[in-house]
Image 1 (spheres, rainbow, N blue to C red):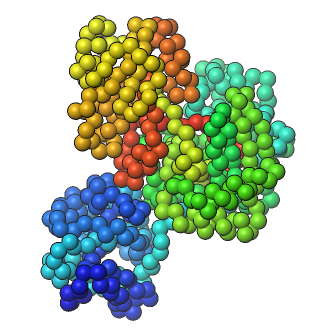
Image 2: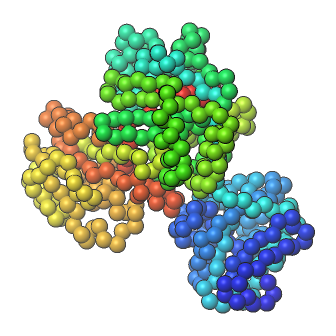
Image 3: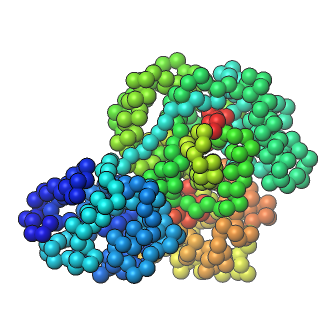
Amino acid sequence: MAGKKKRGQTASLRENGCGESLRLLGDVAFFPSALGRLGDESLLQRGGGNADIADFAVGHERLHTLQVHTELALGDGGDVRADTAGFLGLTRAPNDAALHRAFAGQFTNACHKFSFVKRAAKSISEIPGDKFFFREILRAFAARQTYLLRAFMAILKPFAALRPQPELAAQICELPYDVMSSDEARAMAAGKPLSFLHVSKPEIDLPSGTDLYSPEVYAKGAQNFQKLISQGALKQDAKPNFYLYRQVMGQHAQVGLVAAASCEEYLANIIKKHELTRVDKEDDRVRHIEALNSQTGPVFLTYRAIAAFDEFVAKKISETPAVDFTGADGVRHTSWEVSSLDEIKFIEEQFAQIPALYIADGHHRSAAAGRVFKSRNGAGHSGQFLAVIFPHNQMQILPYNRVLKDFNGLTPAELVGKLEQVFETVRVGAATPRRKHELGLYLDGRWHRLIFKREFTQDKNLIEGLDVTLLQQLVLAPIFGIDDPRTSKKINFVGGIRGTAELEKLVQSGEYACAFSMFPTSIEDLMQIADAGGIMPPKSTWFEPKLRDAMFCHLI
């Protein structure tokens, strides 16, 4: 790289006996960044991070991402912080926290993730040698270990699922633990000894008022789980399979792949997140997994649809299913085994082309699985977690509505006056918003239509432009005094599955003063925010239908 290259010229370098050649496009140089899919966001929008790295990038404003990403595996012999500091010429080595911020959690002792960047103008020979001298960086790589170039991919594995006997599935499979209270679960499981709520909500079999997080609760869940197995109600398959899981809810149908997803890829952010998690809820799921030695509630993942795989699924679901039943809520659940070696190979190859998966629902379950994986050092099957993966174009997102306890000292008339400063329209209207940036307000026994003023919606990034963000920043915090909706006692959240009638009921009961009905967040917005390393506000999405616990269990 001593001489200049003409723009568009392709070069191949081989330094100090490295076993792989590195293909270069024009004048390029290394710069570490969070790895993403092709066409990802620009370098400085990849989640922030270490100040030295950010300052260095800003100092070279002519650089921009080439949108070509690769992985350089240096082995586990070097120290991450020292390597990073040495490669970048930093005056101090960043700590672990800074590294994980800078690299969006993708930096590990085993793999150093880099992106190419390209100069828009002058040749690479003019870039300061103490920062960007390509040959010296390659020598540093070669001096440590041979590097390896590979495509970014989603690794999914077949597994031997623990499943209900087909004729008992309707009696066993239940909604997830976190969509109901203990009292609701107790009522739902009454007179149903096979109900999986005895495993996922085991406090229902203990005296009322029992601490939900006491050791007795987890022990009871494990006891009930083993009882279902010993009775033969749940039985493990003899060999690893993939599975297909179809749900039909009214006119909506979705078919997902049931597989074991990689905990390493979750920790490396190849499986992308869009929500923060709470430690106490993670702790609860960790203890549940450890007590049962199994993952019983799947993580709901999505991916950008693949036509070839869609065709495979359409053909497969024409075959006789393994399980087929309709729940009490009218949702139909059907599953198929994918067991032939050719089919398994085809699925693995299809998903090897996918650069990323996205968590739709199940951030705490996946976080807990990652923690168990690390605590067990990957022993047994703890390196994978139970997941159902749906194509993005089949996802159904419902709104996540808000109910408020009081007017924060305002009269209804004063409240309307303040809202008129934020919304173009505040008048009697429909309960259900029809488009983005439109909300419904239930106040004084009537629904009001609210439309955000354009001055508040223009020139916003994806997160800032979400309706839930605008409502929080412009209404809930300044008008209702709700600064942190995750901890405030003045607000509650109601899933869209309950409809706007539930909002009316809650307000009419006197328990709440008013309610906001939301327009649902789109799956495209969710994926773009996750791609950019962003975090959505709490309670931004409500996915339906919910995956049933015990349709598939993953023994670890």
